[in-house]
Length: 493
Length: 105
Image (tube, helix red, strand yellow):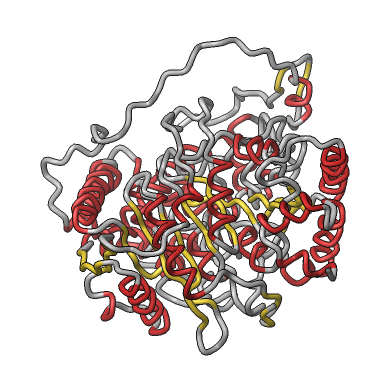
């Protein structure tokens, strides 16, 4: 096998290769690290590559294999982790100057899970500062580029995680999704990205943005890897009080379906006449036809409140929670700090110089909507609208088992195109935000390529803990359109 | 600048102070320009009748589980303190809190 063939292998193919003795973990990790070194100058998908840690971990795993020790489900699989998820002893920046040199003394639950499963973490992924953004242009460490077209954005905020998987750095990565931050970049980079049901995956060690909306989830190039990654990271954890205690199903089992007979797939009423890219509309129609051909009943569902008011609802609640969560960055205990005369001066100057423009904007909006004279009209009203959105989804799921919608209104946009107009930029999350507000699981996946060679994505949304329904539907689609493929600046490999 | 934007700029300065964010003139202006269009969007929520809705309904959610209240030892305090901009004798150190000459408002 030629070494760069390693980059295309799935997690499953890697673990079986190690088992057969076809190649070693060090062979694979060495190839991956060389590949990263050669491409990072262009892509900038990683804030902190972990060359030395990955090499010594690979040696350790090869030695364990030699001793005949048990292999975890992700044994020797390279994984990239978003830089708002802590790893003990490795700096976690959140894409911010505020945490440029912060080295956490503990690992996130999901990182412990990955390590127990035998994974090799190879780097920390670039992201919009504190996960606020849809293009990864708001990173203090420079933008990540889209592997399909270097003049375009990879989406965000988990743009580095999505680009890493699309560019062959790793078959699996982790991101976080507060309003679409996994699903929108997955669609832009032509890979799979899953936001699990709120409370399925522990947020212990995830730097908080909006605590009632945040979830960690996996990216992958095929569903079998995605299901395995979800299995590994969704282990019960008491350190996140919201993490649900019930037993997780075997997610891989949902992928063995031949037909969708008796299954109901809902589509968004009137999507054909919405302001969406024509090629994305065609993608949705194509995906619906595949489901129908597999025996599913296609039903129309109406989500007028979620579609019309999801954005303003989210952009009230998320900044409100962020303004509270980000109060901890004060220049006292860790992170960036500025010399100051007195304590108040320290707070003002540290936060003024440490945060970037989008974070400041959202802290200000959040503080504004929580102010005593605005609380009822803005924040409380948004919470009530959130309840309406939950009810609307409850009604939709009495008609359908899973919903199939566009993932984004547009194809990946050009760099610099939306950075000056936040309201326009916020539109990128139109189809992903409602699932966060209602706590539902959502997956985005590539359905086809546009005429210009850009990935076209669709989204599947399920009931609470309906990850199985989503995987089942997606696997029927994957069997027709094939898994995701690697790209580096436009040439498909 | 008209009256409306003066009022808005005053609002932004007040909110920035509450949020402990120092903004320079350029930033305040930039944010002022965008703030209005963002707030206009947020205000569309008032079009919806939400009269009797309980904004924090949780009855459909699974109850949060209790965890055992166990003591765990953890002794990496020096690592934590080493992350602080300033520390002394095992404590975080901050600049003085009260300044005699500050004009408190």
